[in-house]
Length: 149
Image 1 (cartoon, rainbow, N blue to C red):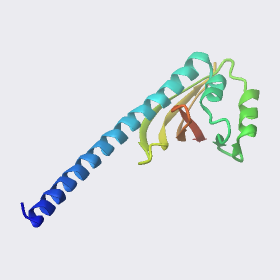
Image 2: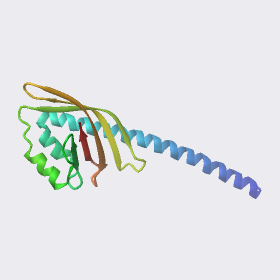
Image 3: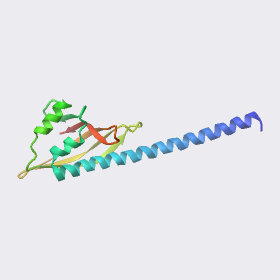
Image 4: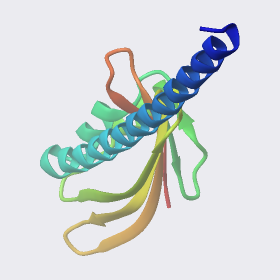
C-alpha cells in the first residue's frame, strides 16, 4: 500500500470517529438534560410532600446557593441557608413544573425554568422561576441560583 493510500485511510477513520464522538456527546447532553429535568421535578415533588422549607434545604448547594426574590436583595451561602431555616411553610404548598432544561457541554452546570404555584389556605399565587444547577462531587444536581418572581 502506498503511503498516500495509508494517509487517506487514516484521515477517513479519523473523520468517522470524530463524527461518532460528536453524536455521543449530543446524546450524552440529551441524557443530562433529561436528568436535570427529573431532578427539578423531584425537587417539586419533595416540596409537595414534606414542605418547601425542607425541600429547598435538601436541594440548595450549601456553599454557593443563592436565592433571588422579587423586591429583595440576593442572599447567598450561609445567609440563604439561614433564611430557608427560618421559613415557615405550614399551611402553604409550593410546587412547580419545569418547562425546559439545558446543560453545559462539560455536564457540570445547567439551568431549568418553568412555572410555579404557591397555595395557602386563602390564596394562590402563580409565577415563573429559573434555577441554575451544578453537579456536586456525588453526581447530584444542586441549585446554585434560584430566581422566582
